[in-house]
Image (tube, rainbow, N blue to C red; front, top):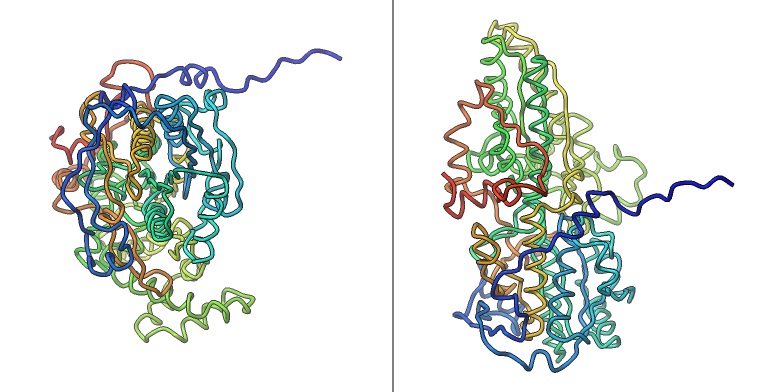
Length: 562
């Protein structure tokens, strides 16, 4: 038999990238044994303080924590067993969080061990896990994806699930659990921390802020990991489209970008690429714009460009736009409740038409009329099953096609009235999963490693119920500050599946914030010109000003960019 070439286990680029050594903040370099905790003032939740305090009597009001230099030799005297679980959607840098955890543990005591639950939170309930050794970790450093231990969207929330999780951890003598996830997953971390304390367990629960959507942040959590890499990936694609549209000059490209409940991704990509039109969901909500008003806004710009002989352009649409339109938001909220309340009845129905007619019969008259007025495809998409958190699956709703369908009708009417003299040919795109598992940018590689290492230090110090916080991110990594933020500090009460529940509040685009204000100054110029930027692919090697750049959002918010 003829010999065949052996297929390499990874690309040449990945082989070189695995050799990259993330830069640790100076405070963490010597390890947990040389770090002391400095506590701040007692905290309270962002809203609904009395209700949140009642639900979390054992973990509410804890102080913020900042790490400072000091001697803490007791940390290294006892060997501990830590477990990590990846929860929710993937985000670039997850493997480096695990690498940071492992290195932080081993630096404190070589006998410390790290285990990974497989397949997300369900791995805790089913006791499925594997040990993460330094040798196993080597091939995953600085890589994208969550494939080392995979992820999942199971929520541990019922009394039975909470009891099972505690039993699994106690049976396997786990001292600390690290949950890597977004707002819902870290709410779950807070629930577990409270339950463990309530039941007399000393198992520490630490959260790590992960979501490409960028909506898990505050003064102490400046950004969630993965946002930097994902927006750079999307910006490269949108930049390519901008160059193509300016070359062909005959199509309108409608690009829907990921971001279920906030428009941070869309706004960041707009700053990076300067498209002709960018819809920001939070602005639509604040102005109480109807679907008709949005179509009028789009049509006016398209007509104005056509008058100048420009029958082309690029439009960015946030994935969650439909939920920001007040009339649609009311409809979706009503659908969420009805689908939850009538789950058993709906499960017996065989067709989407039958389910839709049933739900319409239960809606208030105005919402029923709105539901009937929607194109059949969009109405059906609104009826699809919710995600495990009870949210409409907006990634399955083709909002950009809804806009185009309504625009064609509007522009045809304008042409009859001689208010539109051009042509309207459209192409649609949805960039979502393309950004979730990319090789982390240098910023995300450093940030996630620091978050993981920092989480290990929090756990070793017995700081249960905290979210790993690494801040001052516009500085060089060596100067980043580290510590923890109480999970309850970020919570409020929201309605989920027809019930009031505590959840970490999502950080939406602030219209008085610098990222939006800077965008608002420029969008009229971008609308009528071809001011397109072409950021190109993520650079992993080269000058620091190229490899280490932070997002425009972070730079604007932290005052390092004007």
